[in-house]
Length: 403
Image (tube, rainbow, N blue to C red; front, top):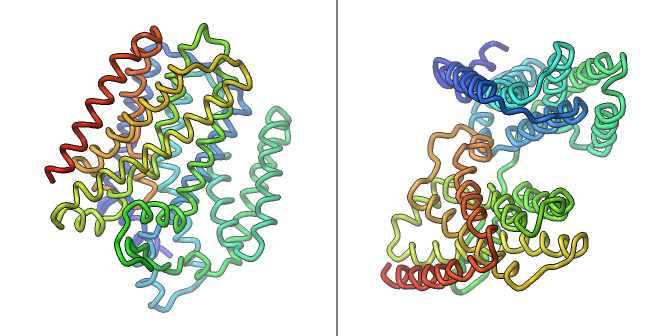
């Protein structure tokens, strides 16, 4: 087991496990900074436990479905192995990676902005570990995923309604033990993902189409599409949270938040082969960047329009300048995202989960929040911004013709 664990752990943490020490130092600095700044955000314990459980389980699921583990697992499975030891080592390596580099970041922020007791911190750590083990166990239950969904629903019900009961922590421990028992009987090959057919730009067509490639890419990556669905659900909920603000200043803020659709903004970073081909072939800046920007524009605009529809239903008063602001923010976030992918792609990542949670994902929403502060001051300020948008589109067209 130790040999298998070291093989996976060194890929995730580095040859000398240097990423663990780096992550601990960074999260400690973040904790001290937020705690010293006096930022206080009240968070209910049930929400605290739910956030830790859902986040840990989601990141663990992303790690399990990462295609970058396929080659390494294929090589290891060619060797004689004991299935139970292999599963234990694989889950332990990925679970340690999620807990120490991802869940620890969330805990550092939550512990810094709100006071917690020792029992609540212990419960959060147990919830994170239980989420990781449950994700691995349900992932191995390929023939009984419905049972896993019922199991997850029962745990969520306990987090919502039983967090202050004396039996809360024992129930979480029992759930974790049940996950361990499921993993002890799991087949090692249930964690190996078969390679799917690669997406082709010119599949079944006489001429290539980059736009169709993007939609086929989403079709072959259902988790990317699911993230967009979650973002659309958030677009329907945000007006309920923002309608207490005075006037319509919350509208641009909502557009800024909805620009954080990370999976569709990392298509070059997550595929080194595609990045090399795009940069190597002549004329690919024009053929790729413009359709890519238009694709991101449509994705963001869809979420913004759902936000406005929900605002109209809940609060009313959607005007033309709001529709113009939706187009403006969608275009700006698309342009900035394409420029980041073209000039500053993410390279230092181990598995796809690193891409989804890279700090660069906050760059575009931060710029959009700054623009939201300018647009939200008065509707009239949208006029020069719309002129800027027209100039930007013209510049992009000329830039595309140049290349």
